[in-house]
Length: 116
Length: 115
Image 1 (spheres, rainbow over the protein chains, first blue to last red):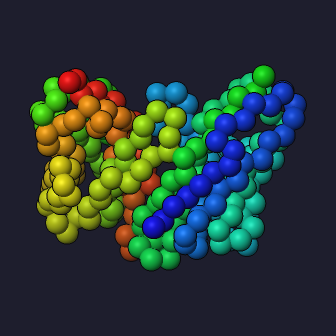
Image 2 (tube, each protein chain N blue to C red; image 1 turned 90 degrees about the horizontal axis):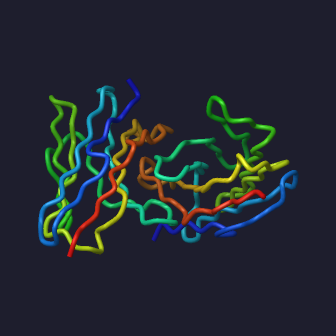
């Protein structure tokens, strides 16, 4: 149990375009979803936290107008990178927390974004 | 005070040996300490976790040792195998009380197990 999926697994887009990444909890309802960014050979950097039906809480230094997060339901959260630039190229990973044992986080497989 | 310090940065172990990764924290309010395993190009997977009311937890070849007074915890991988080669992250959070505490991650340890 506690499976989280992401789509797409990788995406290439041109500079200036927007790209949407989906995160789904497949076999549980996620009370909270998290979005992380990871650069090569580095740790995970939390970007934002979202609860279903409410606005996301962004970490300091993360541009909320650039990284739009929508937590539409208890099983789906989306991250939209708007007006992407090459410096936005990174590995984006979501995670989800459920009501049972809410201190545990389950991670998706990640999405590799390359902006050309 | 929110940091989790992880060492070593990289580790090479022979097949069958014991891999040991250490983490230290400052915030005594942390009450949940998970370890994650991440393979290249994949998301982290929860490996094993401990809460501060126990000093050790074992699951198969993986053991967490927890020293509350020293504010340290470590991951031991017994009989290390080449398939264990991955990056390991320790983390800590305030989340075991049902709060919305976020995970604070260490910087990771790249483990290579040589055949």
